[in-house]
View 1 (cartoon, rainbow, N blue to C red):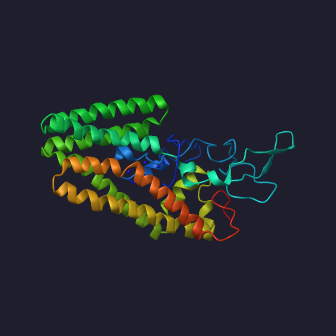
View 2 (cartoon, rainbow, N blue to C red):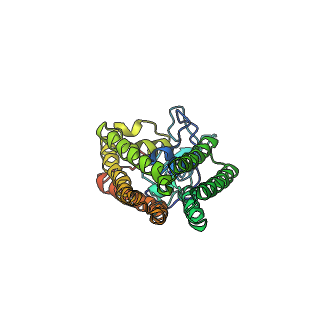
View 3 (cartoon, rainbow, N blue to C red):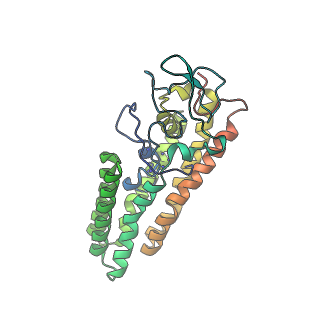
Length: 303
């Protein structure tokens, strides 16, 4: 992927629709790995629906790879010529080269904005009620429930929606138990620390999470790991995401320590989708920079 993450959200300009990969081995969405600030934001980088960004109709063969592998040299962002059911050549709708990006593959803007609303509501409720933690917590829960209902109506996976709402509830309970408004953001701090550690570990063991997420969205499973160039590119680009989580910790920890509730709310807003968008763009630049000239691209691992 503020959507460990906490790397189904960049990276990139996207539609914000949740990923639905029918071939994933579990119900975990790509943004669960990419999001960064709280369980409620774990879908900040939700992947696109099957076929979105593929330039194809989203159909998959038995090993999870998208169909249309025959005919013509493969080019990233330009699907190859396939065969229609009758045996005649059929050209899939092309994806313009200038539009191919991590953002177009992963999306996630709407989910990131949705995850930001409960913390902002907490700060506003706390402030307007004269520094009342119970009022702030109640406001965050009401807004969180409204966001959950909207996401369910929009078609998001119930599991991801419930995890987001659970994150808001846990944050509210912590603040109520301690009586300290800044503790509402402790879940976010812990989530970013865990995300940074998870991404670093994934790079060290040569399973970079950016490759896991993009490979899942593209239906490649682990085929991308058998391409040394792609493995190296995903590993280097994953460090961009590590830097994202570390930056949040550098900002949030001192503000939490100083009990700066309003500043925490402002930072939560500024370091959600805007930071994710920067990560998507920078990591896409790193991927393109590291891949050698003539490589067919993310969609076509050399295996």
